[in-house]
Length: 509
Image (cartoon, rainbow, N blue to C red; front, top):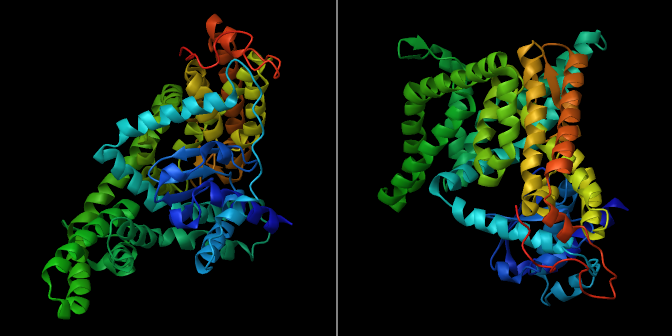
């Protein structure tokens, strides 16, 4: 049964991350189980990566296990339940749980095995993580933590909005259309409140106070307030205003906690936090954030309507490097702002082309290394997830540690982005009604002004261009002769030594 399968996966993971006593918090996003650990030295990385359900691991501020969309949402509650059960028992459970973990299969002997390549990917990630631990990038990670929990609701409401639009255009079920519109729009009308709640929680304030201050932005009564010589509009400033308002509320609350006597804290601190932050929001932040939000929407529209193919080429080609640098997290509030303003974000379908280039590059690696069964097995297992937009196993397990295939994957992304950008310039503008999914999983969330047929055709064409260009660039330019000599080997496993080249000699990039 599915529940038993998900529980077995959770039970297999638990002892490999150090057991329940090593876990301080558990959460999940679209594809990853995110675990905060007390001691990372207790994690058995190689055994964890060998589990059939695990597509890859990412070491960041939290330890992230890539399980894929759908699977992670089912495994996480089972994992949390196992942790809770183990903590309530007098006898430690890790030994029993570890018995359920399957033994990792022995990697085939070759010039460079998938495990060795994954180790290189891990080393590259660790090096980048050390370089990227700047205050600005750490702040971006915290901003991402605010929006990631909102993604499931964005996806669900986005798909319902697309279904409602289709029914409206076809004239079907007219009595159902208003109900679907209410269901799809309800969350988006109050998204500022959720952003405020999550912001206060992330930055150490009281979540409900952050939500209370952010709720001012969407309150209809703000239309009666005059600020800077003009009346405010409900929702003005959107998620950016909510983010700024909640950040201010956290600072005001912390200031009050240090100075207000304990006997008065329960009355004075919440009152001052909401009052001071609310007034600043009404007579400053809503106006400023509204101006920024309008500028973002105008700039994105102008960029694609005039820059077209060039803009798409740059965005699609640079997205994978942005992911490596951690700067892609800055795009999450921008995506959300565009969805608030127009109903969809025009940037996401273009950025999704980077994943198409990555898939094409991985397929080329598969065909260029016919003797390396270890890498080919890894690619075959990771490609289905790659087509659905889950690129971490291919990035960190294949292209990034190889070096040159990572660059050629970016070329594929640039080509796909240029294709989509060109059609935006020609009038086929479209976007995604939610953030999170990519690849084929983005099809149900597409929406645009040119009609669903043209929208789907252009997006599918962009994916095809990304696949083909990533494949061709990698096949013809992704390997040097030395790389092929080292990598394209699969000696007799009984021999224990590679047939060509030292097994752990670094591969030139």
